Length: 298
Image 1 (tube, rainbow, N blue to C red):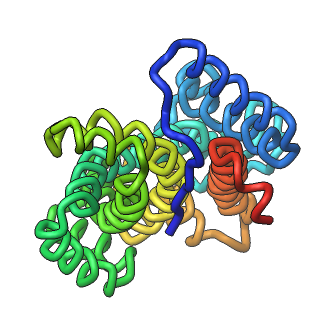
Image 2: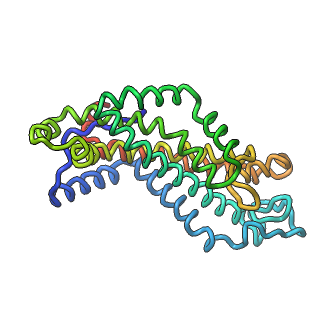
Image 3: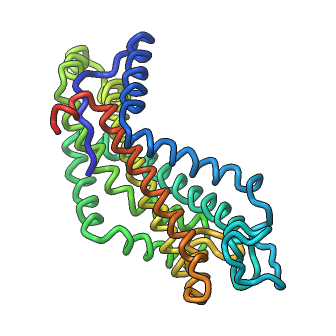
């Protein structure tokens, strides 16, 4: 569980916000691993967003006369599969599809998990109910929940994203709840209570802005998990369905001719590794940048 401790409350002045952004940016730029992760993440995102522009062929276009071409073949940068489809083009569109699933699942986990975590952390009578359900859900492995939900809802990109997002909600609730429990004991929250501010006003005006860093960092943790989850669901036939390519589908297709054309499995595997590594490195650097006390604790 990732929980960020913030030493000072979020300020409301433009000068404070500007100095805070400058400090975070400076910290990121001076973190070699974070900078590497940020550059790698930017390349991955550009590959997914610009897939229709960068891909020389349609991902479903077949070339029956040129199957199993090796990487570096003229006209096929990364070679072709058993049907002569360009692996490079399919890889770009596969990254795009996997990122779509990841983003949708993260949005779902944040939109549902953050309010529930805030409510559970602020009001003890709600905490008893929300935390018990969260504890029961966390007793099951994440992928078991995702596979079960995907099997019930049926295979598709949207259903895979929803299944992965729902499976990540308990973790988001736990992270935000922990932050809320800490922040609600702060002086500025206690001061707002003495001024008869309502609970909802305190939550959304004081607690949520100061818990936002934990939510952001947790989102960078959820994203690579969702990408791996999508690859697993698609590999099992419970996620994105052909002819739409995804990294999981590319791996599933490549297993049939793994020894004849190993590169067809290597490149999707490297893409998954690059996505996960970029988010992990950038997320760790972002956590340190948003938490001024992190360096002192190491």
